[in-house]
Image (cartoon, rainbow, N blue to C red; front, side, top):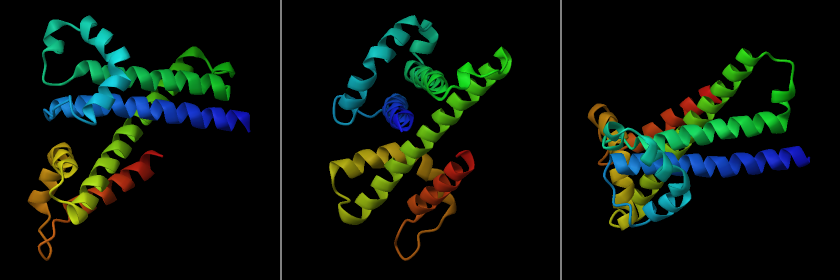
Length: 184
């Protein structure tokens, strides 16, 4: 029972940190003001790791449009989660060889990284869809619109408006759920 509780807490903490790092990279990519919420919260959660990584990156990567420090921070956090999970579950103490163990930890970290990215996008799109029905003029709607537009725009070109309603967000939610089922 204690192992399950610790595992849950570990996954929750790392999910939040990885999601914050990925959201920070995404917000920088779409040029969202980081001084307003949720930018301040995301930066407060990730500065301890992103700032040292940003200083360590080569100048060409640091000045790229992609926030590589945040992306690398998310990957490092996913690897740390995989290592801690392996220690907690006893996988690292098993009789696996070094190469299979490294591949197992890398694949587990990659799976966590992709799962967090998909679930974070799911939450953003769901929030955008709900706000589009109940409060389309709110600042939160505008922010979620900016964050989700790069992934919704290709769907909007293919999916017609039905009865005056843009259903691209609903289609993306279904596609994200299918992707999560495949990954999990």
